[in-house]
Image 1 (spheres, rainbow, N blue to C red):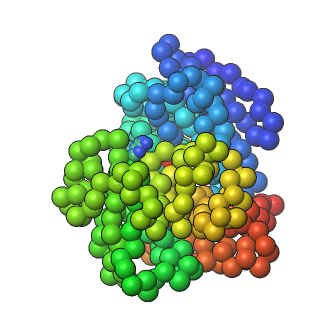
Image 2 (image 1 turned 30 degrees about the horizontal axis):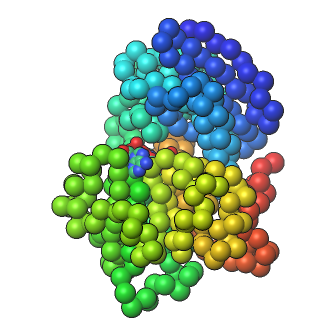
Image 3 (image 1 turned 45 degrees about the horizontal axis):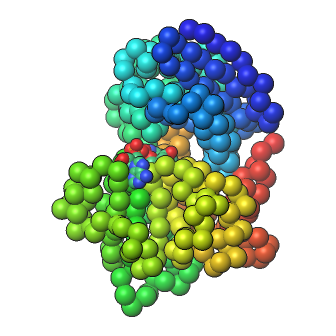
Length: 338
Ligand code: NAD
């Protein structure tokens, strides 16, 4: 394994690991609260530079996410520029993680599963989510629960909870988080959501139509949507599409939804309630952290449900401080860093 340490301003440690036909990066952004905790993403990137950019953004987001969730873990992330998690690649992941001697703890993420992490764990002691006996392993249902609670909180904050018509919600991406969120929305007893869904994989959309009575989302339906829940990839809100984004509420599980933080101000100025992604989607890491310290399902559930409470508090503080919810969430996260 080839290992190179990269010097990146603002990051404690960044490494490039290379094998014969693929590369991986681990970024440790900040460990002032504890060892860095964040998942291992595996997907084919257009270039290693793009993979490096992704790991840096994701690691920084983990610092904010872990801090705001009250966890004593820092921010870090791993990305592997490869198409799928073969056994050899997961061993490579384990060996790479092991070289950092616990300064970075990994978990599953986009492109990797609990079973993959069990393979990585054959080569490292530093895997948070392995789903060992009686442990939940998959953090995604918790992420979905947190997003659901935040959608309810945002709807209430906007006084839309008693709207006479059904609230139309678009869930973009029907993977581990998006499917779980759609299921919760479909089974919601608090109010009825009219579900719109999209995914690159047509069979997932077809399954959501059959299972939940959802409608396939197409851009011509945008004007009807009350809540947009991005649950696929990041950077869905960009300079080049911001003028097309008119959804009253944006609240989803995807990481790094905004191309730049400045776009939060643009959305705010246009009366759009943007819910900070690192606050909304912390359910999974709350569960992963609990696996490390001694799993307590009741405490995890309460802490994940509290994402909605934290979001409401953030909205109110942002309103009083005359700033955006994103800026307020960042302030609150930074205030915990020693
Ligand atoms: P996943 O890989 O299980 O699912 C992603 C889904 O999005 C797939 O079905 C894919 O086909 C679909 N997709 C990709 N591009 C799309 C597009 N342009 N339009 C519509 N659908 C598209 O991933 P996941 O674990 O569900 O994670 C989803 C997002 O949530 C990611 O951004 C991830 O970083 C973030 N997130 C996940 C967790 C977790 O617990 N899994 C926690 C925090 C954040």
